[in-house]
Image (cartoon, rainbow, N blue to C red; front, side, top):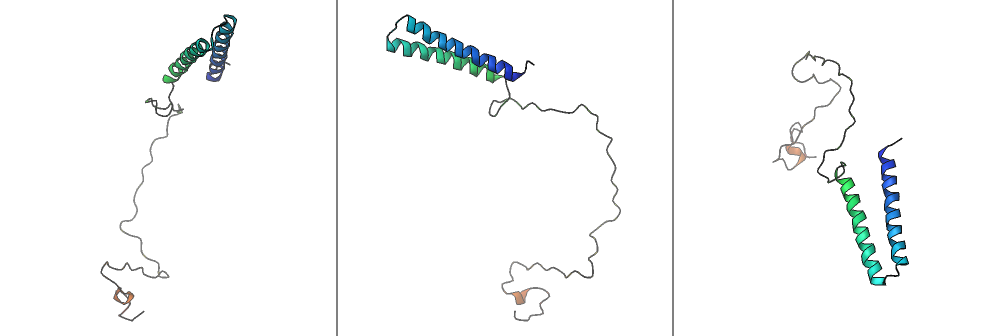
Length: 120
């Protein structure tokens, strides 16, 4: 199988071999410490640039590219028509109590509709 994971693993292995070979070559050349650090930093920047370039064309968060959606190739069934049989609100059942919403200026429960002014 040659999936994206195989290519990433191969690229990672090649990057490791490159950086390891670079370090080995610098060690064999008996370069000074500052030169080794500078060349290894340049090698790391090169590897990071390759990684960045390989991720630019893949959709991911904040890449600016839309995500790839797995969509079905099936045809959708035709839409069904829905007919409305009744209009208006459904009738209240007899066993339900009426619900009152207090007006904004009602400060006491005795001001609410349906309380007949009894103090509660």
